[in-house]
Amino acid sequence: MDLGLKGRSAIICASSKGLGKGCAMALAEAGCNVVINGRDEAVLQATAAEIVKATGVSVTPVVGDMSSEEGRARLLAACPSPDILVNNNGGPPPKEFSELTKADILAGLEANMLAPIALVQAVVEGMIARRFGRIIDITSASVKMPLPGLDVSSGARAGLTAFLAGIARQIAQHNVTINHILPGVFDTDRIKQSSQRQAERRGMTTEAIIAERAAAVPARRLGRPDEFGALCAFLASSHASYITGQNFLIDGGLFNSAF
Image (tube, rainbow, N blue to C red; front, side, top):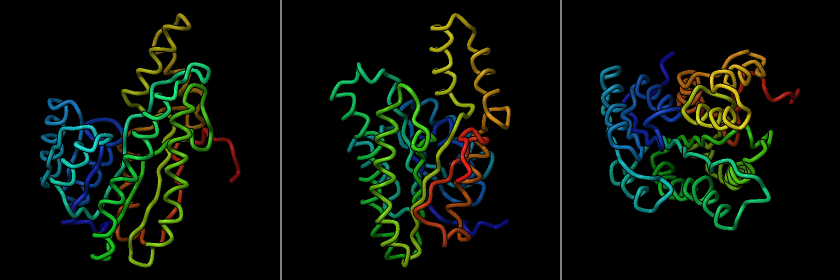
């Protein structure tokens, strides 16, 4: 399927690896010129080279943290008028509710709610003027199914979802959409790191913990970043203009609900 994205420009935050990289690769395969982002320059440059080799599109790597004003300014300087914005950022480290401080909560809000909102504000008027825009936020399945130790992440991402819900309806008439993708358990560094922490706590191997987590998913496996990216690319496409303000859970059936 031609997604109607050839020649479009996209900013994909936190995209040197993991789900962000999956989105960047899928958008590049659809013909988008992409601005990718990460804090590790060596990893970022390697990802840029990989995408260029695979797709031949223009890839602009921007080193920085999208949580900071400086990081966001660098992204916007590299692509002042994006057609597509994919908001993504690492979540706060797991921490027991009783141990959370005000500083922990504020840092989570800054990274997973306020920073994405700031980028939306920066790009949405241009999208409206050009009558094309796709804003996609990578949040988490924990928005629907809170997980122990991830209270800050769940709250901040749910706050982002609710904050943008009304805006999505206000701008839909201009062919600008806002949607959210809620990942479950995917084969990423974050899952490996959290599994390693569990393994140390429970006296097991990391591989055994990952296998246990995969077995709990009805699909009996972890998700792949490339299939996550495929969903992102479709939501960014010309075919998705009638979809806005929605939350797309992609978790292999782990969230047990009829609705």
